Length: 342
Image (cartoon, rainbow, N blue to C red; front, top):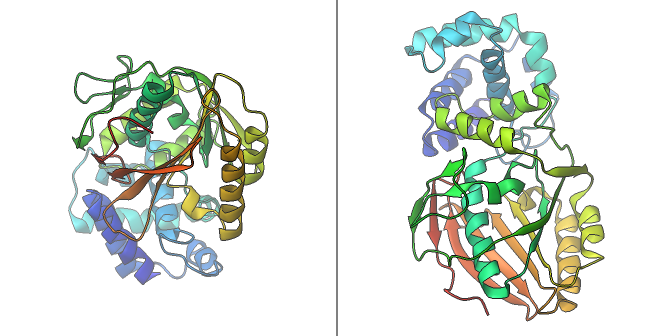
């Protein structure tokens, strides 16, 4: 576990969470091996690091859930907005691990799920780019949608340039470099998402899970997610994403652009499902027309350690268009899209 805790600590620190760095490093040094939680962790096979089962994030999420529910006064006292030194944090965490051993042991049976709303900055920009090119209503299909918060991106405000989208309780202000997207009327005609374990943000337990994986020293992320939950009306299906995609692609509508996308989700699909999904998209793309175009946006990790790659495939024409790069949490966007799409 120690190596997994330290690896996750480095990732969190790189994403500006000093609290998570402190928490995970103390767990690396003081992990209570005699707990049911530790025994449960030992049953996980394969990669337990951030690239696998993400056990450190599951444990940290469970601790944050205790704070959000007000179930551990000692832990709450050392979590933001309160300040604490390393010794007080260590003592409170180790007591909580033993006091809530059963809760945490059950909590980690579920994989982490977040819905990073700031990624919608890229979705807004891409939708405006597509609307400028085709002038058609947009049908949205999100793969790995979690709770579907990013399906609501047209209800958010992107605060760059003179602004995009309506004034909203969800305002996105990424550090933006590169040209601004065109201003266009991006109208959403249909929105739907899929996830193996979709979360219903109107359900208190699911809303807790979404919020628990936001890092406690990043309060603005928590407030932004709560505001997005209040706006959320997206419909979600529980299914294998590629089987679901096959159905969504089967009946294109005339005078409607279909925008399929994933934000840091495709990379977790099994290789065989990725291959099949690519084949489905290419086959559907071959049938696309100017009045029923198909767009596929991926916001996913690649071999470059600097953020995620933004890539748009567009049909008709089978164009592959690099749009730039973005931070995994949407803090910055390096926009490199052309002024006009082909």
